[in-house]
Image 1: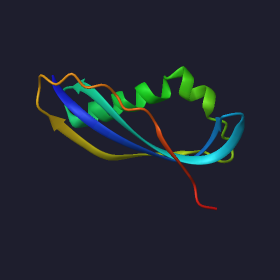
Image 2: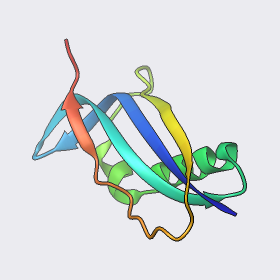
Image 3: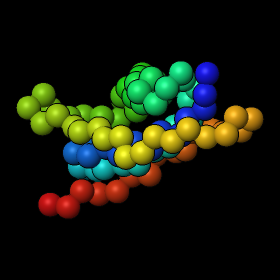
Image 4: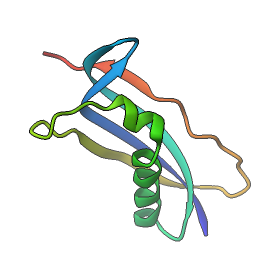
Amino acid sequence: MALFHVFLHGEHFLIHKDGADAWMGFYKNFYVEADNADQAEQAAIRRLTGDPGFRAMVRNPPDQPPELNIEETTEIAPGHSLKDSDFVFFPEEA
């Protein structure tokens, strides 16, 4: 297995934060072990969508689905002990 850095970019997420809902985008880094880049990307998406805290924040109605994009996937040197980043949210332009 190899170690990968997967950089995700979310768009058009209705996020409930600080008592209010707002349309937001976000960036988040994941570090995963996988056999190849495709498996690393799938693992990062599973980790994101399986996070109960994240799921509780997302309030998109069914007719306005969010978008999730993989900006970059890079194999990194073994031996690193890296932690996934926090979400970096930004407001979407109207």
